[in-house]
Amino acid sequence: MRYDTPSLNRWHSRVHDSSFGYVSTQGAPLVDLLDPRPGERVLDLGCGTGVLTAQIAARGADVLGIDGSSAMIEKALAQHPGIDFIVGDGHDFTVADAYDAVFSNAALHWMNREPGMVIANIHQALTPGGRFVAEMGGAGNCAELTAAMLTAWREYGLREPDLPWYFPTPAEYARRLEQEGFVVRVLEYFDRPTPLDECPRGAADWVRMFASSVLEGLPPEIVEPLLGRVNELAAPALRRETGWMADYVRLRFAAVRR
Ligand SMILES: C[S@@+](CC[C@H](N)C(=O)[O-])C[C@H]1O[C@@H](n2cnc3c(N)ncnc32)[C@H](O)[C@@H]1O
Image (cartoon, rainbow, N blue to C red):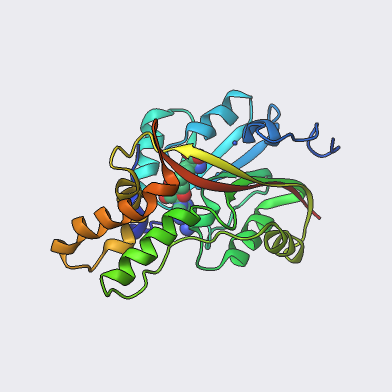
């Protein structure tokens, strides 16, 4: 199986229930919630450069990382020899042999074309009783950042940008999971203000790094002033003495295939 999704190569290559071993508490790392056991077959969907894939492998699981970006997969293969990684799209993948668990961190909200299809593919990839453990952006994620963008775009007379994410409410995602044949065991929804350490120019850098598709097709000469205006608009809510802080909101869940 090999897919390539060229658009994803824009990515900068640089987480008490009997099914899960313990009751999750807010802040518990996602790999702990997954609780991979030696010999288990685990699929890491949207694995990026494989940092968490390697943590799962280090616990003895037999893990495969899948990502839509060939650049990410090349790095993952180079950085983690001995772990299997392939290019694949969450909307369109099948596996030959079923997995005990599917894991996904910070990736499902990018699979925004048809979220139900992604969940259905994950369901098909699991054995009955298999676990689906993930964290993603939830409703309200980056609300201040996106409000600043929308206002700046409007002020510049630009068409409203197509934002490339799916940030569901807990109720909406739980309904989708149940519709596709999962039982939801754990579902958390929480604010996680996150320092923008890699964005010295604050919201402007964040847009370039995480929402670069909205800049495509804009007259090059307006990009800098437009992003400068995003910074001005976002600063009152997000700029602290210590630096910029993104207003992240997360959904974290563990579900079981019926
Ligand atoms: C923020 S990164 C997270 C990477 C990794 N899970 C981690 O926690 O370090 C999101 C990843 O999702 C991948 N991605 C986005 N859309 C995808 C899709 N439709 N199918 C597969 N992977 C996708 C991106 O290429 C990127 O590597």
